[in-house]
Image (cartoon, rainbow, N blue to C red):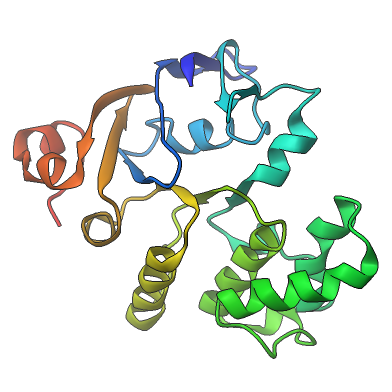
Length: 231
């Protein structure tokens, strides 16, 4: 991201000059108070939002109208509420939706769906109705809907929100095993400490700190100034 600015139609400036580079394979937490611009930033990564100024590049490709289909095959976005992503009558149909709309041959879909569900521990749930699953199970299926497209980059908005302790531990383990580049917006500071080597602090639509997680979390005055707590 270079000189990224974003203003909502009502004139609210949500991002004010973001410069951020993430390398292949990095696992990066994005933290900050409510209204800091974290979710708005994430929505630029696969073209849901378009910059008011500046640009976003994924692997050197500028995210814009002409490239957005290609970008969305590379950047998987998992929303905070899995019900925003699950809308089909069965788990299989939800996980198959992305590859089908990418134009993949139907005979290849079953393998993609099986691999994605296995990777999140949901193999055998293909015929289940998504909205009858637990929150933790729905979050896993939402992840599988993205993984079925085999993205290079995974982007999560508050992935641990609402999970019980077991679901949270399982998610931390799962994310740690994933080879993709990860960018995760969260308020869960113990999660940040456990799972992310690098942390970016945002406030007021700007990046106010960026560095190794242990250094960021050891800086009490920085955390307090931006509405955060030590884990």
